[in-house]
Length: 149
Image (spheres, rainbow, N blue to C red):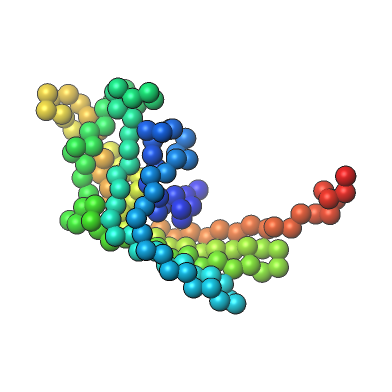
């Protein structure tokens, strides 16, 4: 499952390969809080490429080098494409519900095959334009049986 925060904040694979570490993302966030729920609007004016461990890094890179100097983008604006996201959240009794949408540069690159300057095989990150909609729900009620110890 990809959460809205995962699609906004780029993963930092240099720190740890578990995809839990994030690079952060410059953004403008506007929150509208009403009785019918909270709407968060996000404008992401630029894009940060995913980081990958290098051959000298402390983490294993999988053996095939990833050449970030040859990174490609579907958008002609490249890393300057303005992305956006919106999320509505509310609760109904014990249920929390959220609906989100992201439109912009994917934070998960596809890899294209290529060669480096010496003719060696490398993988080249390619960032596509995507639209992603998500629904999340959770129940926050703890049955009273667990409260009696």
